[in-house]
Each structure stands twice: as structure tokens, then as C-alpha cells.
Image (cartoon, rainbow, N blue to C red; front, top):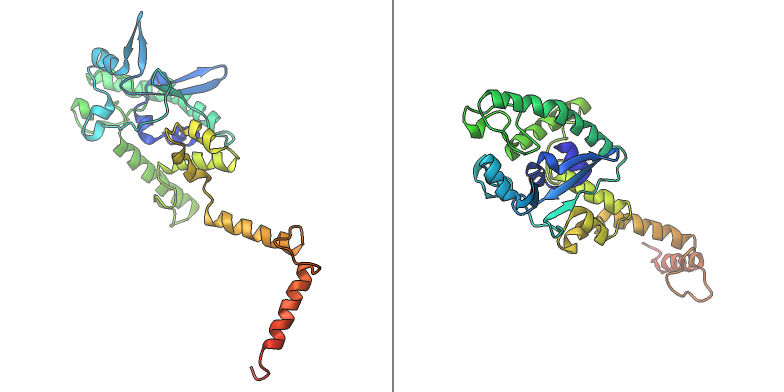
Length: 273
């Protein structure tokens, strides 16, 4: 899940709503799609139906945004096509798409089938969700092994991973935190800031991150204080080297004007100061 969020920039809730069929290998690459958990039109035999109808008819399930409790996974409004889906766009960070593809291949061919086989053996039905829990919480269908992955499970695993990384790097300050960007949602911000630092425009970031409003994309193009300080320092150096002249100083060069200012300040200081 972490590799998915880092490489695609999607939200945690969108990952939890993903079906196995939402990712596919084609032309030597992995392709992914965001599909509305209720209204996306699915092809079922010779007919089309909504994902909500498919869940109810084939699996006896409700869409996860309609649930309560631990199995709920929300769905935030986003920019979708007319069929209530959108293609996923991969982060430009080198290797992340390939890493996710390798992990997904192993997961689909080995990890998920072995978990779901244990689910069947325990007498629980199949479901189409991609991410599943590897351990049983209790004997009920809601707590059975292989149940759709939950936000609580993802958060627990993420915190444990950060703790292991903190020990590995011998960095006690490395803890999950919103302002440090070390939460699961921070992976979406990593994706957005990577696009902005790579020169993507606001409208391009909007499309990549499926924002309905371009205003949601401006947080990534807004300049941070350190960016402003860097710009000011660059301008100071260029002014000093007379690459730019910020105002008309007549016949005086900038250096002469500064020398004159220093001389006047020196002679204006009282002798007993």
C-alpha cells in the first residue's frame, strides 16, 4: 500500500477501495485506474452494471463508503471521466513504478492467493478488493483473515515501519507526524511536491492528482519560506555583481553608491560616539 501511495499519489481511502481488476499489466508496464466504488460501470458478461450492483449481486457486499465501523473506506470527490473512472499517473521519481510493479506481481501471484486460500478454508466468501488483511481478528466474517484491508491496519503497519526505520537509521526524531510529512498521507504530498519541483504547472498537477479544483493544486506550487530566501539571496548576488540594476542611480555604479552611503554614515557619527 505504501508503494502504491508513493508511486501514484492516490489517497489511502482510494487504495482501500481498489479492486484487483483496477491494476493490470500491459505492454510491459503496470497500469492503474481509480474507479468510483459505487457508480463506475462494470462489464458483467454481456451487460454493464454499476460497481454497487456488482458488489451486492455477486458478493452480498455494500460499497465501502456506505459502511460504518472498521470496514468503512471513504471516497472524496475527484475529477473523473464520464464512466466514473480516471487513469492513474505515475510519479516521475526513477524506479518507483517498477518497484510497485514488482511488489504487485509478487502480491497477486503469491501473497494474496495464499491469504485468500486460508479465508476459503475458514468458510468465508470471496471479495474483489485488492488489499486484504493477512491475519484474523476474530471468527466473524468482519474479522476473518482475508477481509478487505482497513485504515486501522494500514496505520498500525505504517507506524511499525517508521519505528523500524528510526532504529535502522539511529534517528529518534523520525516519528510519524503530519508536519514532518511522515504520515501515510504524506506520500500523496511527496507525489505533489515532486511534480511541482519537476516543473509541472498547476493545471498539470491538477490532472495528475485528480483535483476537481485547481485551488487544491496550488499548495504544491506555493513557494515555501526557504524558496523565497533562496530567491532573495540569488537577487542580492546578482545586484552586487551588477547583473541587474534595481533602480536608476544616474552615473554612479552600485559599488560607488554603497561606498558613498558608508562614507556619509561614517562622517555623520559624532566624534565621541
